Length: 291
Image (cartoon, rainbow, N blue to C red; front, side, top):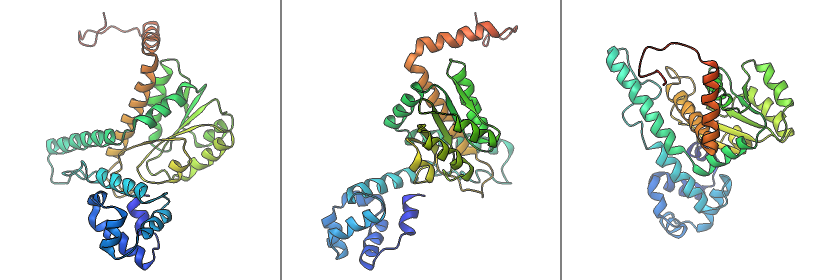
């Protein structure tokens, strides 16, 4: 749930609602206002802001203000000229359609990079570094993204597996330990079948990395580390998950590359050595051909 949605669904007192309306009216400009100024402008008191923050799960006004402005700044960036849900229409030519999809994917990449947090990424890499076995969990077509990540990781000697059969997820999770690591990929962060797995892993003290949308969700609350993906698509009324899938692929590639670079020489030599032992084919194209 986005912070704005949480604000709209929270019951406030009359004075609190006056302040909330003031905050929503000012949008990003609220960053310039102190508690004293807001209280003066709304004929209330600074303590009202503290109560609002507490109701929304924050320690105080500064923490709430920073989160509110950060969310608005993200939502007002990128995607100004294209709709992630319906990026093209029946009137578009095939070339126009192609260009719009290209623009959508470019916007999705830029959007994802704006959400990338160095501290969270570093923590995720450290969990992978200390993991004996890593399980990647996702539902439906997201499992294809998970399989590509696992393929890359296995080809540098890391034990990573996916679980395309849902019942297998539960059994494998029950066998994981605190020396392992789990990655969950869920756009909404609310997909019910995944939480059966999460609960099993929590009992086994398995650290969890989540790839999910911005805002608060069950998954982000339970994860040890959360990496955010672009959050522009509605749940159902979209042509396809063009934007979210592009974002997930990029975050997984960044996670793989960040892991790879920790021991660049060893990982590169392992991968090249494996390829030399197993890839036998004649290639005529001089661009593709290795010496």
